Length: 346
Image: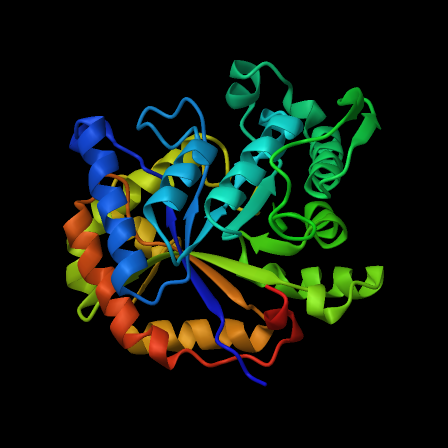
């Protein structure tokens, strides 16, 4: 039976110097927006991401913010997309995850990734060279902790005798663990270890599904998410005129940290004009009809879950709220339903 795919709003809580607000005002305005989404709209989940030592204050404590969001909402799911598992102690992360899941009544979903930026690793006392091992062992620790049973672990990065993590899971197996990946080896790992796949590149879905098939992962456990930097408006060009500088700040932050340096044509220099960043395809700028067409194409590819970053860094919350309302009213009702078996187990 066809079912509706799910949609999340992704928040980074950045506060760039050129548009800086007092931190209490920034957090307050975005949390008010999240409460409005929970109360009045049809968005399914609020998601949070993690980075450290960004000059614009990119959210560094997503689990703390997840607890705040859980306490302030009653309907929407609360997700992490994503936390850098090698930068976090997996036992502590298990405690935090089970706490947020209990606080939210089982609405929490954990997304993990390996990270990539050496200064974050150095600043938090680990090494980027260990990220694969810490990720694999970390997921194993989380799975054991989410069982609710006592367990011991003896590996290279985690080595401890029997313990039992509390609080107990509010549902069998605890929160789902989705894994973010961008390159083939990491996508294979997501298929092997994750309850779902968080895609950074929408051309990689076929690789993920093929990897799942090769591993014998049942189709009802093959869950794919697509993340978009999304500006959807009745007049998208006018909207970009207001949001473009904020979007350029977002993309430049990743360029300066080397995210795009290994492309066939490396992208290493920050943009100086928003129009150039737009022309290079880093953001989806569409009206309702264009958004529906793009989302439906991904549903056809097997995507069952979408994460939308609509709040550009430093952009006024009320300006973004207009676009969120437009998306809710003019796009959501028209996205095709999916018969993918995984929708019964999300």
